[in-house]
Length: 327
Image: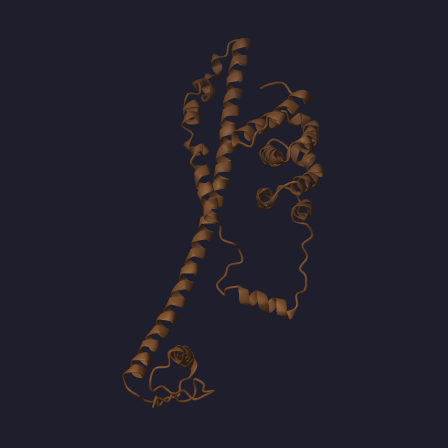
């Protein structure tokens, strides 16, 4: 593990890329040097503001990884990031597009689910990201317009786009659980780092230091892989939610179309029946139609009026509750 210095930190932040491997590798290095957490956070904030817009989100990904994975070793980073994280969210959100804000929203959702910060800090983060969205009173006409434009079967959440599902599935093709190279490295770890009974073999300082270095390297490898697996689990949970929402919306869409098909098929049958009677022989319909029959009959009546078959007479101003007279 390389020694810590402010210059080394600045260099590593400048080399930080958007890849998961890059973020987690630097995160492990920072957690290892957590005794410098105050300086690390200060440099992180300074470099965040200097970074180009397309790299700012990566800095927040790094902060997210450090905050969550350092909690098991101590509260240093959680405390030191707290005074600056709200302004960092505001800064990144102000210079980002809607796609980037969705990623910020996902980070915030994870922090809320895992109670990374107190409610007052989380509320400030929501304000920083979404602004002060107060519900405004709407007029009766606006409410009616919304009701008319919304399907009664609509869901409060928008279904994911097909392209989002494809992208999420493609990202999982290179997931940590399928990394054969790392599997091989873990399987090839020296037996000395796995069996504590072999500690008796240490006979001098040199062999002790050598074993200590082997253990540190193994811990780095396993911690890195563990972080990648944790991220993969989150990604798979997110994909599961996306697929569930997509499937639910498709089922609702199918049910709606089947319902419309049933209505149209019924109207078609009535239309066929009426047309058959109208075009065959003159006749009168000695029945008053009500309810759905009346609605269907009006549709058929309007269709027949367009073509005016011979012998058909419809009283002016007639309704579905009046007789249809054919003479």
